Amino acid sequence: MDFGFSEEQEMLRKSARDFLAGESPMTYVRQMMEDDRGFTDAHWKKMAELGWMGLILPERYGGAGLDFVDMVVVLEEMGRAVLPGPFFSTAVLGSVALLEGGSDAQKQAYLPKLAAGELRATLAQLEPNARWDAEGIELEARKDGGGYRLSGTKLFVPDAHTAELLIVAGREPGSTGADGVSLFLLDAGAPGITITLLKTMDQTRKLCEVTLADVRVPADRVLGVPGAGWKLLERVVDRGKVGLCAEMCGGAQKVLEMSVDYAKVREQFGRPIGSFQAIQHKCANMLVEVESSKSATYYAAWAVANDVPEAPLAAAMAKAYCSDAYRLAAGELRATLAQLEPNARWDAEGIELEARKDGGGYRLSGTKLFVPDAHTAELLIVAGREPGSTGADGVSLFLLDAGAPGITITLLKTMDQTRKLCEVTLADVRVPADRVLGVPGAGWKLLERVVDRGKVGLCAEMCGGAQKVLEMSVDYAKVREQFGRPIGSFQAIQHKCANMLVEVESSKSATYYAAWAVANDVPEAPLAAAMAKAYCSDAYRHTAGEGIQIHGGIGFTWEHDMHIYFKRAKSSEVTFGDATWNREIVAQLIGL
Image (cartoon, rainbow, N blue to C red; front, side, top):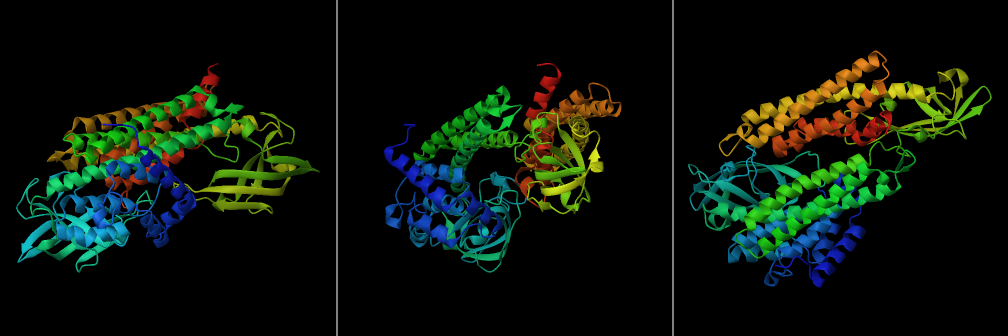
């Protein structure tokens, strides 16, 4: 086993990165996120011309004849680019299923079309019971003369709405476990098949619900031995796991690079945030996670490519590790990019909007970002700075009519749509002197008091959201079954819920103390507010993430409420500074 890539594989990586940089920039990705199909025919054709569709298919079927390690090289670059479209479902799931289980006639009928990019395929395994084991296959495959009748529902089928070929797992009535499971090749447009595009959190990979109502399937459309398809399905899924891990490695690597680059230039407290030990440790931990993910994935790719006995174990280990690592890396990126304004600062130096004295008043010019609900407000309270002033000196708060001449308010599209955020641009806006709050030029202390109370209010919201997430997770764990029993009976889920409870109750304690402190205006109120915001930010984010994990795939869909709490947790985390920012404030307040 050689963990190094060959010269040819490195050339393949470079060509893939160059192609994706030119043909699939983030502008294309964003466009396809808004597009129901999720890709363009022109883009699909170009990838087919590169030979990617048939990368692992034998040359006799028009493929390149490469192995799964080569596929992992390309998938890693696709993950780096967050490539949308049905490549994974077609070139990995569809191709592997036909390669592993197809008869000579089936391979001859489908593989050349797959290699040429003339056919799109996908695998339909998961059902409403949300089980990935053999018992999760409940779709009925009833024998009918010389064929079968299929009835049931599949959920979260990748790219089914653009596929011509569906590979569907079904079960003979009366069978249990791995026995009686078969894989069927279905034309997506066959009578009785209904495909519904689902609205999910990740719009770079479209997922669908596929309903089959008494669909007729000839006997020659069964993959492999009838009733013995579970082993085949396991092999397909193992290779799918490894392919997905490669994508996650690429994405995590890109996230790391973005975070490091940003930490070098983003300043707080007068220096780049990359000079702070907390950020350095975040980036270092991300690097360890990324490189460990790659090691696990490359080994798993070698294992499945060489069909060694430990391939299923390697695939499962890689998927388990990479799933956590990518989520961690993406979460740390969010923390590193926190509270973006034009200068992305929450301290006094972050107030750069010009408040120029003009006769008996002021002229305000500049931009404010992420202003909550500005598009529906009649009154704006805007922080500005007198030219030439620095630090806390020269900052004032102004009362502005939202419709005043020179004010432009733009609603921003953000992850959390339960709290609308806006960009507010002021172009030489005239403000009378009597619209200044407090003492002109001495508004920073007032702003700090407002923000401290805003932090505590936000913490209270986070406590309520985290409590609800905990309750939803516990209730779901009591009824959701895996391996024949409620998942709440498994120690891993019990410990997740127990940890969530500890975080929720600790958040409440910190918030209630901070609320008392600001209500009574005690000297330690700023410290209490910063401590509460630091703790609650991490706790709500972690609790919401664990809630998603406990609910499984359903938690990411638009139809389920869990994703709403997850998004609110992420947006609340960065408002008034994330946990790292507030810990820095705590350190300053205690004299460090």
